[in-house]
Image 1 (cartoon, rainbow, N blue to C red):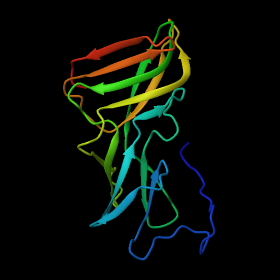
Image 2: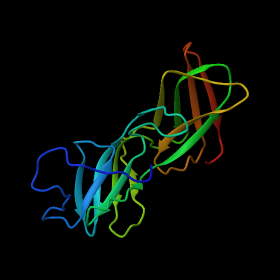
Image 3: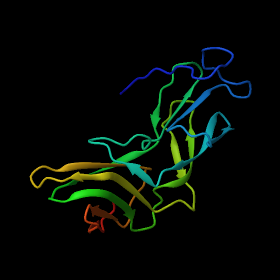
Image 4: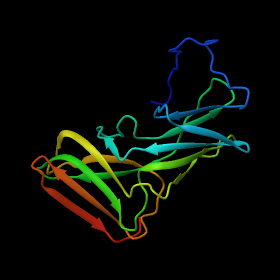
Length: 188
């Protein structure tokens, strides 16, 4: 969806969103977390966030809570910008997939602690992964997604902008606990 409506769920001073005294802007981050720390940094804002190491499968899309977004606004018009990008894998076969794990071959950071910079000038947000962040991310497919031999099934992972300088490895686990590995040595 490209738009939504926010309504007040707790009692407060008014029904409108409003920037506090210290800050000139409303800062909004999705997915919701009550442990995000935000700081004003010059004209912009930094948020300490955690990208999940496990995402939930959704047909032809990202799972709920997987695609991090941030908004900076001086009023009630909240326009989110994606913090992450995505990788779409197209799989065929006869197996029932229960998970897909992605890992870079050069220890690229894909999940865990990160700092998001939200810009007030509508520049796209930036993300910096912490040194202790994880080098893998897993797509949990619940009880399994049945593959088809003739038509590819899409599996989409939300990822920070990263160059897989030495390629990456994809490990698919099926409902019989068998694993299948596909890898590339090419930069991607």
